[in-house]
Amino acid sequence: MRIIKSIPILIHQTRKREQNESASEYVRDLIRRDYQRIEERKWSWFMDQLRPGMEADESEFVPFDPEGIIRAAKNEKAGNAP
Image 1: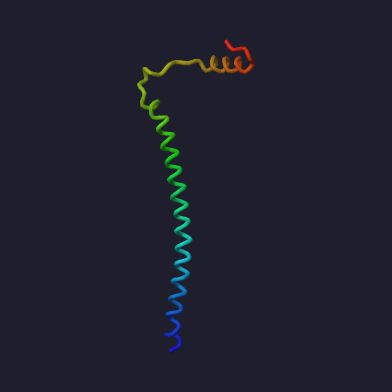
Image 2: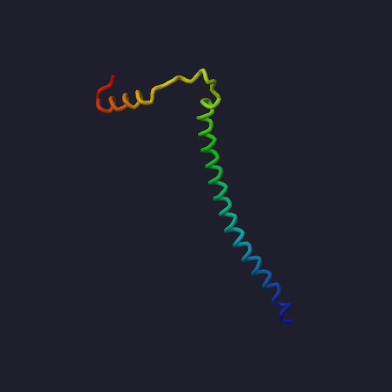
C-alpha cells in the first residue's frame, strides 16, 4: 500500500527533474541555433562579396605584377610615392 501511495510522488519528482533538464537543454539549443544563424549570415555576406569575382568572365580580369605592387607599397610607406 505504501508503494502505491509513493508512485505519484515519484512521478512528480521525475517530471520535475525532466522539465529542468529539458529547460536547460532548450536554452542550450536556443544558444546553439542563434550562433548557427549568426555564422550563416556571416558566410552569406562573405559569399555575396565574392560572387561577382567568381562569376566574372575571364576577360574582365587584369594582369598584374605582384612584385610591382609590393615595390610601390614599400615606396609609399617610405614616403617615395611614384
